[in-house]
Amino acid sequence: MSARDDILNSVRAALATQKVPTPEPPRNYRRTAEDLPGSEAVIADLIEKLEDYTATVIRCKEDGIADAIDSFLSDAKSVVVPHGLKKDWQEAAERDGRIVQQDSVDAPLDNYQLNDIDAVVTSSAVAISMSGTIILDGEADQGRRAITLIPDTHVIVLRAKDIYPTVPQAVDILGENPTRPFTWIAGPSATSDIELVRVDGVHGPRNLRVIIVD
Image (cartoon, rainbow, N blue to C red; front, side, top):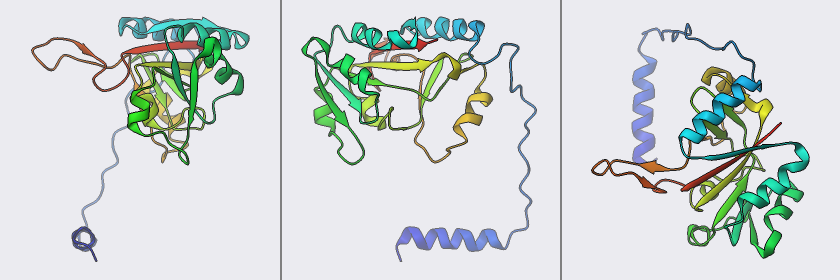
């Protein structure tokens, strides 16, 4: 038995002798908004927040996704994609001679390889207009967290129907698969921790480009 197991067993034994009730956390906060998920008002609110965070956003129909991906990758020479990304989206990433590599849990690229790649293209799970946040949940078309943190540019495909006004609404959706690794993205990575000087790209991509599909 490891020291960790010994400590945890001691904690469990101590807790088993306690009769302190666990209070139910209050749930009286606002869960919904006046506007429905995916409505024009909700989409506009998300776009405003994302652009305020210096992200770039375009809207298109289903048949315009590939061209939008190609446009957003115009300054990239190499791209990584999750293994479950739609075939035509990957083909769009391969246009103009861009080198595209697939990443998966079974065949992951290491951090040094990812560091040499210019951009990543993924889908997304949900978004929250109130906070300007896009969330990935590790699905096959979103991939491992590492591929979304190391390349300099992240292109995200987000469907309008998956944009929710409030955090509780989005969390309810995520709660259907609570063991997945969630990545919450609110604009490009930036920090002003040192002498209040903004530095981009410290904890993730410097460029966030979002395609909202109507």
